[in-house]
Amino acid sequence: MSKILVVDDEENIRTLIKEELEDAGYEVFCAPNAKKALEILDNNKDIEIICTDIEMPDVNGLELAAEIRKKYSNKKIIFLTAYSHYKSEMASWAADAYVVKSMDLTELIDTIKNLIKIK
Image (cartoon, rainbow, N blue to C red; front, side, top):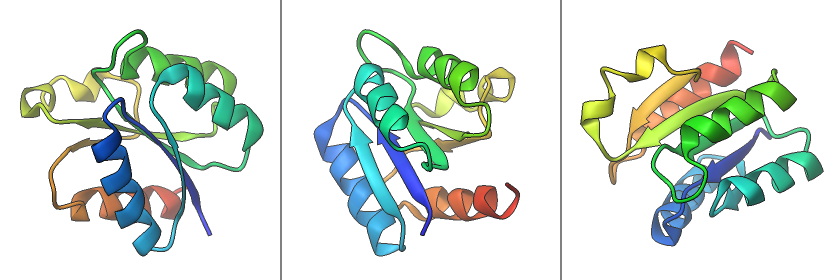
């Protein structure tokens, strides 16, 4: 079973994503911020994919991704955003995939499946 970490400062979004990913057969960890996300990664080295919001207080998703790349170069990172205008900028950011958040998590689940296949 693949393990995924979801990082988002909004609890309702973390809960929704967690439930959907668990229904799809993944083991899911959640963090409300970058500090907690790094703690979880330090204690669960077998997490394969990190799904992180871009806009969060304190440390944003871009900064978190940079820190993860330094410590864990083998982890796959998916940026999540509610703002579709980021889509054009995301290609230059250090992530393996980008998903615009919506209530339909099919795109996220498909993206995770594809990243697991190519690891």
